[in-house]
Length: 314
Image (tube, rainbow, N blue to C red):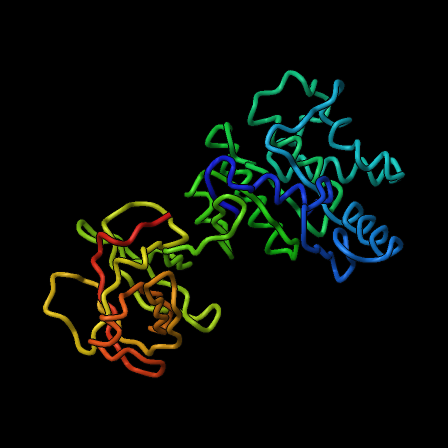
């Protein structure tokens, strides 16, 4: 998931990945085949053809054609010469996937904004792409449509499709991302938050108990105490600056105290990012003097402390 302010380069990056724009410098490859940069003409042509055949981009303000919803969703299939019965099957399947079953005969230009966005997503899904590029797919849509888009993205990613999407909606970004990339002025900048997948275990009057996924993929990780919130949540977010590292438990009102082992210490713009394996990996941003005072080093056992109020659930 790509996040960043307007003008940070999210849409430009997606268009470059789809071969719609050429980069000013550098090289881009798809499955080892160059699509931009140095390379002989035959290799570049093969790479661009592969991208066209195996990836689809849905723009932030996608175009619908005059005619029915079914004609719109089946457009890409028809121009690729897919037989009519197979086209009909894929159109019906993709419309059902985006929650628009039975819409095939409706006029495409009479749809709401959220419905239009879903039709354009269905048009992309019908092509069964290996790579799905989505530019702000939940912008300016109703909550129901946003939920549908999030579900489709999650389901397609789980099925093996590579999804690269941009969004301004941080709740969507946190809920969907395997990797979150923040762009500023066309460059990737460090993200200063821990994004921990998991699930709500229990909520009482004071705290929500959120069980994270452990360092071993799929294993149960540590339990985090968060401000009480009712509902189902997929991700806990903790700013790296909210974590305090110590050699022994602190005398503090903070409710989250996790023991762990330092796995990495990395320099970052005058500070240090310290990774601690507490059953899940937590990163803390600390000063060089703190590293010296606490004697932080790879392999050292530490206690990670943070307040329940520092944890946000999405």
